[in-house]
Image (tube, rainbow over all chains, first blue to last red; front, side, top):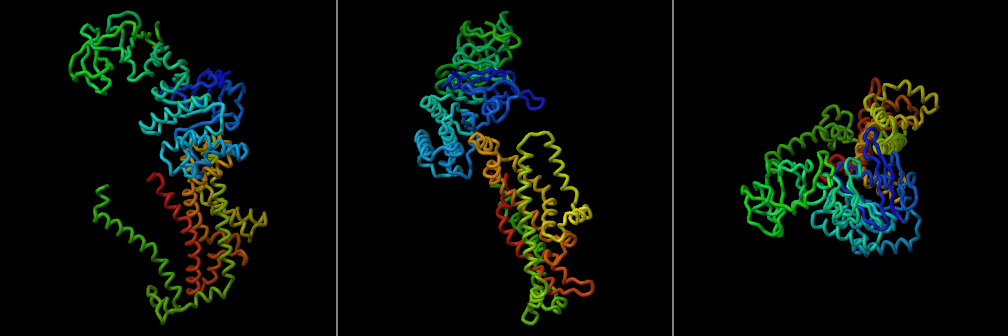
Length: 331
Length: 279
């Protein structure tokens, strides 16, 4: 059974067509990440699913139910926002229990669910504090707790980690992954950060300009991108692209090779002038110019390379991705 | 730390300018206050002198208490001001919420229409308003004043409040919607508390002109039972003789309630003016 089905969903604001014929299916218990550059419509899509915006046309089904005309609170969803959006006048306990109270749940049920969520998220010491007395990470945990107590059919996360600093982001990411394992619930997660998408998702939906570019598991998309956009968007550092003409090859117009597939070799096909070197300890990123094109090579281990040096970079032919001039993948 | 701010010369200049301004602003109030405690002769002989044993007199206050029903005037002014503020804040905030929150046809036009009221003084329509009040039988009732002042205060209230409401986080309102709060609950429980400083600003800007207004009380509600304080004080100003003791005493007393209301709102007001500067 599927937790969410979108069929030919369109959304326009006046003359601006934001979502174009979006078809997505989310299976029960699946963790799906919508990823794309800013302005690609991923947040709008989430808001359409939540019912905060109406779809201009198309079907939105949650479970088996058509919810196009159902208000957000009746859709069986819970949402976690980037800005936490905690109620400033309520303490943590009341923040978490408000939705259940609105739904007319008994006090016993409310207390039990709040206690359970608070235990899962280690919020027990903070239950009587107000949001203004919490740190960013704690606030985000409260926001997640507020979603958990509703026991929704579908969790929606709108860039929940963007306001956290790097270390906290990684911790909270792991917490969300654990939570998904424990609850086994269906989750939709919107982010522009490809690392979050790769690490959390069972399935990634790559969006661009309101269209679905490709859907698949993280490794499927990584190893087998449908087009140049997906290939360039996933992976860090991003895939290198250069005209096929540089290598005197006639197959395809643009060639792509991932930074980790490049290695130093005297017989390498690419003569490169090193522009900058990033020593990360475990890896060394070499940024170099090849015939006026910038190329990044990610070398394993530590290498003694300086800026200005000339090196030759090689790659295995089977690790090359070929695209036509419009960016579509050639197999 | 900013260097210019710690420079003692600049600090002195800044405080000097502010103190000068305070002195200029408070001077008339000060003159009214000291003269209200002086005999008539002393007022004219030395208007700027402080009352001493010889010139001290409470005659003005005694006249005010004796003549006319001063406490009724007081009460009338208070009722008109407070009820008007309530209506202006309530309806202004509701209209502002609708304009800032919902997309509907004519939203922009509606906002401009409401803003038009800021540019056109309501007194231009006095004759029509009077005819309207006579036709509805509201002349010589406090409602006449309350309704007119509400109409007068709404445009600015809507204008200021809708700007502030636009800054209230959309996520917060959406979180409320997902949790099943009604639009009214979202408005009253989530949005209003967050724009409280702006509400205080609007309240203060509306309160003072209403309290001091002479025009509409004189035209719409001049009867003895509905006189406001400002209008009531006018009985001491005659065409040929003016009882300055009484006028100054009445004015001194009229300052008090506004002062109290202002103190109530001012803490919020300062937050409203400086909000956004320090987050």
